[in-house]
Length: 220
Image (cartoon, rainbow, N blue to C red; front, side):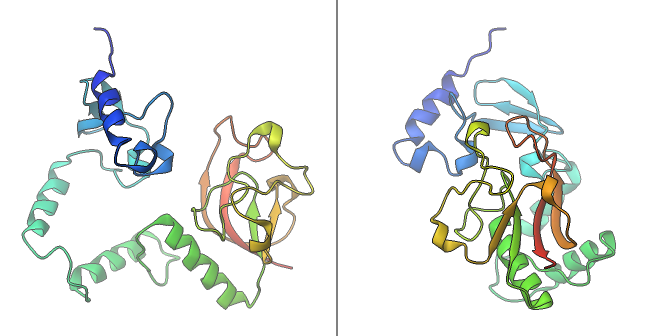
C-alpha cells in the first residue's frame, strides 16, 4: 500500500489559517508537515490517512501505559462523571502525591505544575531558597522550557556553537542572564545539586554532551 499524507497536509493548511505556525506547540512544527493522528491503541498510533506507527515518544512521557489502556479508560470515565475542576483542594491530589512518594523514595514533598517550564521555574526558586546561592548552571544545547530565564543556547546548530569556554547565547537578550552560568558537560568539575536528569543522544545535539542534566545550583 502506498503511504499518503494527503489528509494531514490538508489539515495542516487549514490549521495555518487559525493557529500560529499551524501548530499548538513549536516542537510539532516538523518538516515537511506535522502528522495528524486519529486514534491509537497500545504502542501504536494511526494518523488521519490510515498510516500506522509504533510510538516511541509516549506523548513526551505521560502515555507510558500506551493508548486506550482499559484500566486507564475506565478510571477516566469514572472521573469524568465528577466535576473536572473544583478550584480547591480534594482528596485525589493527596492520593496521587502519596503514590508518587511511594514510587520515588527520595521525594519528601510533591508539587504539581501545569507544564515542564513551570516545573523548572519552581526548581530554580527551590534551589536558590535552599542553598542561598544565586547562580544557575545550564549546559549548552539543552532545553528547559521557553520562558526567558532559561531559553538560551537551545539546540544551536553545530557550526554555530560557542567555544568550550563560552557557549553561545540565543533566544533572548544577554542582559536577561545576570545569574546564569553556561558551560559544556566536559567542563563539569564542581559539585552540584542536579534536578531532573534525562538521556539525550540525538546526533544534531552537541557532540560534547551525551546526556542532559536539567538544572543545578553551582557549588561555588
